[in-house]
Length: 120
Image (cartoon, rainbow, N blue to C red; front, side, top):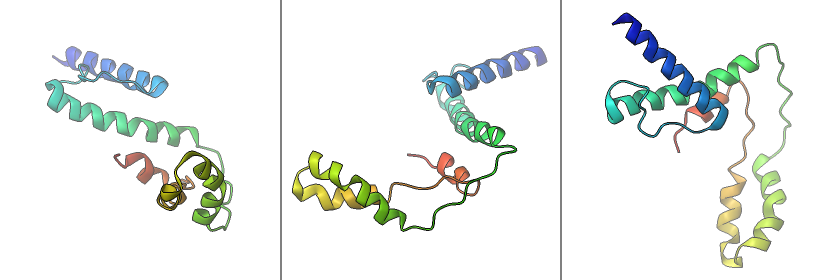
């Protein structure tokens, strides 16, 4: 039984590695025990943790640049406004600019966990 459990763990590790390389995974989560429901929940948990663990591994020894002290929402709106004006009807500009203005964030060691862990 122990050898089977180890083999399953190797299959899961291979699936996680494939996910990190391609962004694709088995929709039935067949590498996890418990069928599509329980196995799917375990796979979802493992596949969500994997990018965060990889990022943390890669940043060891690196220093973060300082974050500029700017109004990020206003800056973002100014940068995307010409694109929004050219692509969308005038009646939609305000709503789209408001949404896009709030969509840019700076990723730091303090914020990365929440960003990668958030669903949706």
